[in-house]
Image: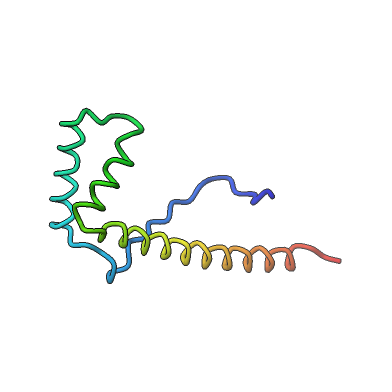
Length: 99
């Protein structure tokens, strides 16, 4: 399926307020996890899974819950964008095609 797009779009979608962890809280934990990764010589592709696991552990699962809420919210926003894009696409076809 060709969407006939000549470029890309970046959608900045913040985590829903009810699911967000405080910046001070999560920043401190991220710093700790980064220091631990460095101390254990974790590098390259191993950094992200290590950090996610450490964040989950250090936040007693709160970071995982927050990430799941963000994924759900991203899906909702993507669905809304798709519906609006499809509606616009149908409107343009009706206007531009004469039968």
